[in-house]
Length: 326
Image (cartoon, rainbow, N blue to C red; front, side, top):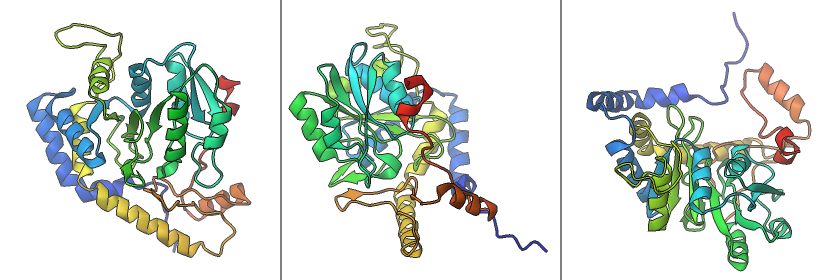
């Protein structure tokens, strides 16, 4: 007899798939039958639906969340000799995209509770070469956008929101990714709206910028092999778009369940020594991850692992300590 507790995976995509299996298999078969695999009607439909869901005027599909950041930088003409403020605590791609654009990431410390970029520390990091700020809506909660937008206006800077982990999150009445000049979404499988491979999307309210982004994702082609810009190959494929359209219909329900489970964790851990996520009253948290801070983090991780409970460290090393930035 096995008395060990049942395994609790860190992320159970199998359970999600089981609930939508028939819908997914049908749309995949439809795409295969049509034999149209890159961009096309499915991608255009997903772009319209995500734009409607977020309140964005335009949504432009691309190959990944990283590319959503990179294409945003290129669309805003940010490149060599420019500096971009990024939080020191985030996934690597936020800073990596800045480097790929030829610009320099300038690291800014985060707020201890909300974990977003600290606006007061951001102002101290400005220089004559600063062109943009990339706030990250980390783990599903928006950064302090009011303060960062004010800072950007005061200094004539662009705002690119990294909303990779925060589709559906809100800052007051605005959806993550729609407050700045552009917003970057990721459809990596672990995200709240995740595909079955890589994928991303850029949100913008500006018609000309949207047109430029659409050119940049197809080698700068304006149509008919008329290349007006030097772009790249960053197209969202139809299979991913079709699957994401199925999942998008369930996103509100899944988000509500995430918030419900976060509430349960709060109740169960209220008297424990761990620090729980702080949800700001003006922000709607979508809990891509429920991240705690523990006095004995590694011991706790080992304890949970021995009992079959999945957990991970987000993130073990801040960006300024990464070898490539030393």
